[in-house]
Length: 616
Image (cartoon, rainbow, N blue to C red; front, side):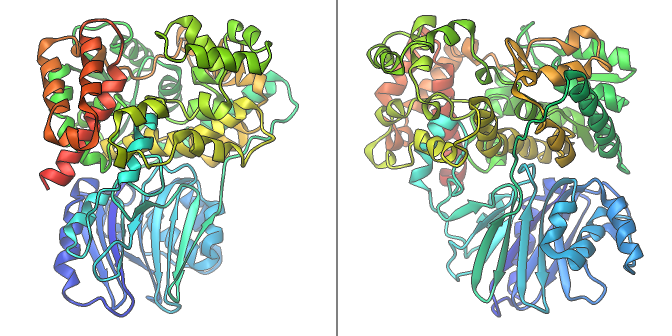
């Protein structure tokens, strides 16, 4: 895990850029506290911050150059199969001065160009400047584990790019503008779902894409996308396929020259990874004064004892979470209201005191079918046998009624897929978001249109597969992986995710629907595979996630007043109909409704906005 910044402006880079680039790189020093490095010519400037993982000597410092000095690269991530690729390159006459994956990646790109992307197993963003051909190349990994931002919203027409947006703010040529169109979809998705970020003109290079810039032309190409192609084998065969690929992948992901451990909750995903990897140390976080859904640390401790790992626990409270929210939102770059980002911040902080790398279980739900909205209750299945027109009518006449099990059934059963499922999280209905927003902020894209557009690209897939692919396209890179990268990077540690390996995806893609979601059993084949390594109670434990007791905190006078002050501020009045926010807050405080997510999402936005557009 590292970080980099860069500037591209053909024939216009000069000595004045050196102090600017250093200041940009220093802004992300948390991503790489071990060393820095720089490259300049008259068209390109790179700044790099290193967190050493493989070959801890100075031989692994970046930027990296080819032997003939015609190509230079900065790279953030890990290539786990670099030794295999290195041997192939040595046979072709390449020589190496280090034992790093970075040098292997550059020389593999030198040999194969963009085709190297199909050979990699890992997480990565990297940028190569080909001085001979005057071509800039940048690529992002398959699932979007590592972030890459770019913009031409600059006074001098330069292209800025890097690992975090906050570095751009240190460049005097960057034009900082708020993107009004990002707020509306955020209120539904809970994260920044568009390619253009909350900063106008700043974009994300999407997962599985690469960019080439040559002769003034920018081309962006998708080189990989997930697909499900079920085969016809027995459950036992699929289970054995999963076991084999997971055992091999975890062994590969353990390789590093630094101390490593494992994040561990009470759920199957991180538990399976911990049992396969046998770490010396495990880490979990829970909430003070809460047991069960809000504190599973005792389960993590029990499993750690079974596998012989030393377990570390951190318990946090409301003051920790709400008090640190401004810092967390600054680290996120864009507003991000997934509540689990907060415990992940403290989990990473604790892990960083002991290790430099951790294994984690992200990706299992999306690949193997783990989220509850992927399935249907028996009542819903029966209800869907009624004509859709009738179900649509019942949905419309009950949509403004109090939310009960029955109205929820009418709502889901009478919705089109793009209305029912825009991803694992859905906060505000679009019409409710419009009611909350001031008119000038209602022009952003309707989340239902975003989902409908995506589903139209995969018309022949089943409903379950569509949902999984929707999550892989938006939820996973925009929410789960982004918070994992930003919260771990804040504490200079690297999170490694074995489930998100191309070889694992190849196996997951073959599994039929009935072995992904089987009645009320989710991740069915994966759970069966884990039984060889996990005790039964862990392999079959119900999914909990990473919940935060915000619903209780907002019924305490102290936090009610904090939220009310924010919701009635002049800043809030700029964006929202604040009477509506206060009404939601009062209903929750008075125990008339459960509005915690509807309150947290705009609150997080306001905290983020103050960090980036008021304080800075």
